[in-house]
Structure formats: structure tokens, C-alpha cells
Image 1 (cartoon, rainbow, N blue to C red):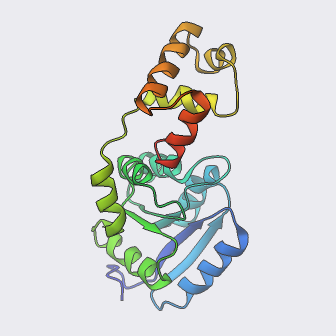
Image 2 (cartoon, rainbow, N blue to C red):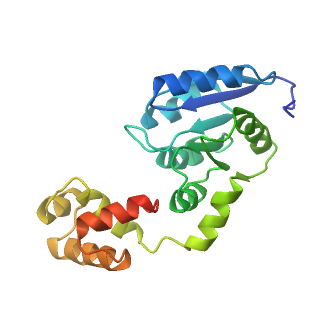
Length: 209
């Protein structure tokens, strides 16, 4: 059972853009005697409001969601609701995602192919102040090393992902075109890519974007 001071159920939010997956996960967690899924959202930009409105203790977030990624939502929660614990549960078990999740203030990082019982136990553990990380992913993250891209290089590379030209990227990020070219050049070099398209692909595969 959980170690809630008042003995009440653990109040959990699920953020997952695939409705069937979200509902199935809610049903599985609902079988646990000490967990109550009090809110469900399908967009990352709905997380903070739902957490605050429902007095959520643990937010379980997917990474790939419309509006805002789970990692971005975790960072927003860290600022707006610092007492709420965050569990990232994702299909994308990438070392770069793990590092970014931890930097954003997440308390746990699990891959979705783990049994629901492991997610339930992770929810209990983070509420006790522990950090929970998939061990295979932790080992891979150590082997992979740190993300070589700076925040600005990630911003520019991310803006280039939809095929935008330098002038559009510069306008969107309030930079000069020359600065955009320099950041893209560095990102291409650091990812050992041949061009910006390949750099985006490599950075995404490694979880750096």
C-alpha cells in the first residue's frame, strides 16, 4: 500500500494522446487498491491545468503528445506544481529522452512494455521520494554520453524539422540568418550528418530533440 500520510488513495493523472491506450492503462491502475486515476488528458498542454484542478499527486506522462511533449509538460509541472511527482512512461526508450526527462524534473522514466504492476510500484516509490529509472535505459544513457547539442542548436534543428528555410527559422526564433546557418552547421557536425534532414533524423533517434 502507499505511504500517503492521510491514508487516502494516490491521486494520479494520465497524459496519453492515444485514447485506447490511456483508458486501458487507467483500467489497469484502477485495479490497484491504493491508486485512483482522477484525471486523464490527451494533450501535453492540458497537463498543468488538470493537475492543479484535481490535486494530483503523481502525473504519468507520455512523451509524444500534441500541444506539448511530456518532457516539456514535466518542466512546466516542476515550476507550477513542484509537489506533484512526474513519471514518464513512453514507447521511445531512448537515452537522450531519459537525460532530458531527468533535466526537466521527472522522478521516474519507464518504457511502456513494462508490466502495469511496475508502473504502479513506480508511482508508489516516487511518492516516497525515490527516483525510478528503467535499468537497461540507464545503462544505455551512460554508454551514450551527454547530448552534444546546445539548447539553441536543438531549437534551430527542431525548427528546421518541418523543412523551413533559414529565413523562416530566423524569423521564428528571432535570430539572424547567419546565426541560424551557424547553429545548423554545428548541429550537422555534431550529429555527424551529411545535411540538416539527416541531422534531424539522427537527433530524434537518439532522443536529443
